[in-house]
Picture 1: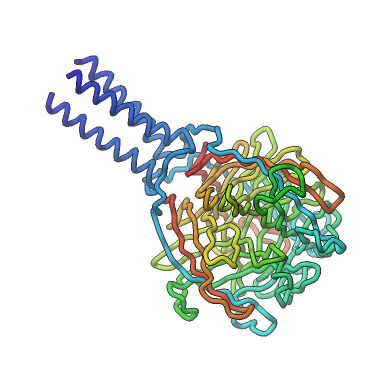
Picture 2: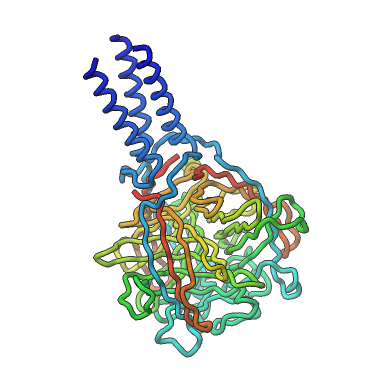
Length: 188
Length: 188
Length: 188
């Protein structure tokens, strides 16, 4: 009986530790295993004065030395681009879109290509309904770069996580395709 | 005594499951009941060249084919609008404001009205002090649409949640009023 | 034995309360003690037509009555500024940078200086690797103001918290220096 009580006490102690440390501090040891993982591609075609029909993005801000038809010199520093890009499951621009990537990026460095992104994946199909919201720095010369999943709605209600971007193709200054590997670590 | 021990073991087992699944994974079953709920209205009056005195918002970015006084064609695609709008408790523009909605929206689709929002509710009254930060896609032709509460400060310290937007009124291309139903699911 | 069972029942009850309230509701009492705290300075030099070499920021959006070389009247309302600013450990512009602050701010009020910020701290040194993402309102005439840490990557994986901004220096309309006191309340 005494041994039983000791074991019991130990159990309680461990339980209390694990619960309270988890609940009352930010330092909990949490699994770095995603609770959900999704891979998509999206396709950005920047308006260049000639491709109005196909363009999915347009320059809407530029520095004093730039304009809104051609991306500015100095690594496009200061160009603000708005986009509404198709999302596909594979890397084919002509695959049936499963949603739209909507938002903006803004080139923010003079001596190398790098941008800041704020955008959403908007889904409205039988497979996914709702949105995933992203924000973060995109040092686009790096093979992969991580941005934050800052929230979600619908099927992605209250999600948080990390998305790994990879430039999958780049054609001149008009078309690029990004692979996005979304890893959610908070699912509700 | 044996039965008692079995029940005890079962209890421990269930407790451990519930605690560890909650703490060490993102997949916890969490209540979809808000811990705080707030409803506000905010009022956006876009500068159109003639209403400098009353305007609370202005176009500051436009596509190559647009300008900064009149919202562009093609569903305003590419227009970036900055705002500092009064927040009221009811749907009356002339009610005493309880705070300011400050930030931007950017029209991001050619064939329908839709925008991307980044803004804050800033409160500094006896009732509320602090800020709530929002981001997300706003497909504004939908009756309701959800964006994310991505953080908060002051009374809304560390908040997360979902805000449901509804266009409560729309007058020409100058005035619109949004109803915002804020549901916080993380309160600290 | 009866007393032992009562104590046991009480324990279970308390444990269940604490676990379930923590896991299944957003209203948990959580420590307002940061799990990580970092202080940095960053330095913003706005392009003014003459300082192309030193400038770290540029006006890329302006209202109809403004331009992109000089900050607009009415408290710069409507100016969108992109930046790539050095981050230092002390308040000396010439100290070795430990990272870059990259993103944008947008002045959003006519009658006082205030802005909305979306940016990242990007680190790639032996000390810190990864990024911290920020968003929020910056009523910059206040001595201190709080914005949200909305996510992080690398060393700051999944971080959330609050950052307190303080204007540490301000020289004309060209240079300013911000002190950023980052308090993370969610660390993974």
